[in-house]
Length: 312
Ligand code: NAP
Image 1 (cartoon, rainbow, N blue to C red):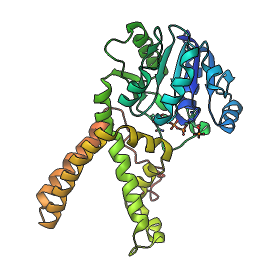
Image 2: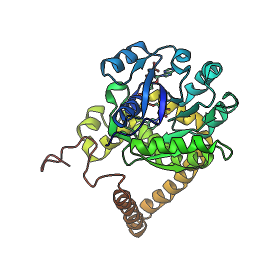
Image 3: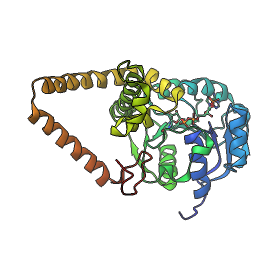
């Protein structure tokens, strides 16, 4: 990617994990900031980030890290954002932009709005990109390339600040969409949160079974189970916070999911092959549309080798 003029002078990223460190790499790759500051409560994580040369400055104290910064991005679990906001609020520079990468938007907006001082602009965001890994070593600069970043500013948010964040994410390589925070939470409940819950549940169920031994579950996992284990290996803190903070939308989508599951149970019980075949054909088509939209490659992945005979 060509180097461009810096959009922000000083950028502070709070949280140097998978997303924070990927963002740091992408900012460096694109030359988007003159001074990039990384902050993390975990000293070992900050040292690891420094060893990887991810930023210009590494500051553990969140107040010192944000003082004088033009853009502050929270890249910590959603449940940690409000407390950090309260601590940094008194040191924020006028005209600074506060943003985040949290997977839930409505609660973040509600938590930060009363804390952010007048003259500081709040533009929440969520890059819809990630992996099941955590920590600075797991990050990579191209994580956000061609992925969507959803920004959820309030309707009365400062237009120039929103535009700057759109420019920022586009320069990083993402596609940008502006969305209402509640709608974001509903969409992500079905595309991300419920699928993670299903994966956590099925892996939990399999590990609790008494009639099938755990070694059999591991041995025959290539039948589909292992694909769920990849998702179910995602960070427990992050996902705990997602479910605690997107409760209503997740419960609404789970209600729909349970109804459809009951219909499937009935189709199996009554031997309704047409109903099963119709559903499986529709779902196959969804996968094709995701590939056509450039959000996935046709190759099987999930850690599989593509060598003939090795794949299942
Ligand atoms: P991660 O790899 O676990 O990194 C989070 C980092 O933030 C950890 O080093 C953590 O330190 C640190 N941290 C936690 N509380 C802090 C605090 N109060 N002050 C400073 N640092 C603090 O997590 P991640 O996957 O990058 O996720 C970060 C955010 O991105 C979450 O809000 C998540 O919803 C969002 N997101 C994640 C994905 C994904 O696929 N992972 C995708 C899109 C968006 P400790 O380990 O000491 O807690």
